Length: 358
View (cartoon, rainbow, N blue to C red):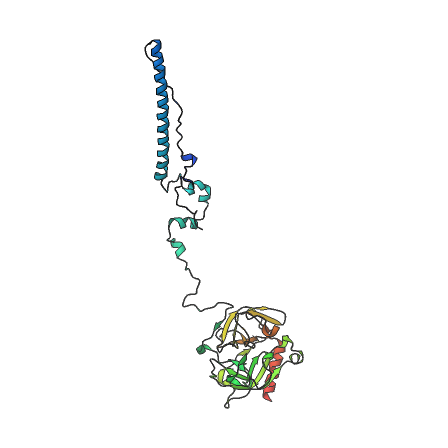
């Protein structure tokens, strides 16, 4: 808060330059009477005396009036020129009385010094974390550097591969056959889709993997029920190796609840870089979960929701959801949804394991 604004005039004068009533001269200009005393005189003497007295009175009155005028003029100049700016009797603060003493101490310091007090300057002006502290802005996504991309997560392309576009995200989950990925059911149309783990900047550092079989729930197949928008896919070996043996895998989590923070890593289709975000999760319904994370646009469907050790950088953890479900993952880039992984997802996983063994 700033103090009263000053306009540069002396506190003793008004806008028109006139003195306030309290500073005007209070000396009166009334006429005085002089009593003349002397010896007895003749009649004409008294006439002369009377005339002389009248003349004296007349001239005296004029002199007094002139002297009073000069005095008043001098008084005005003296007050205007000599009134000290910091004089308590003339300052605005004194005129405001109790209101000045009621101001906060911080406001009073504005008019006395521009140097903050030691207690005020001890707190940093910025709320940015220290260089040694990790950036943990909940709900705000950030780009994952290529050197830190978890190879267990990748982009899903159509049959054109890297020359085409990636339209979804998927991740590898542990299985006996070491060949399963999990994503959203609305992401996989045919087995001609391709999975590129660790994809970045047009490169496939761990190869391009073909999908052999897609496993989705019967209720999704019949009417695209959003409570069953989850799919597992069996991935063909590449150069004689399973995908899990090349990039590793996450654990599938069922019934994880909403107590732990969740990290989501996925690929917006408008970018060749992955983004990550961590925030808390709430229940949208008995079958759907919701999270607030910025920037999860088209292409991030199927992105894994990771919890547990290693989940914040994707190096480890448990997949307890994927972007999908309500409105195929949400109708806003900043709010995402997932099917709550429960017994139906567990059954679907077991079916995928069985199909992979056949």
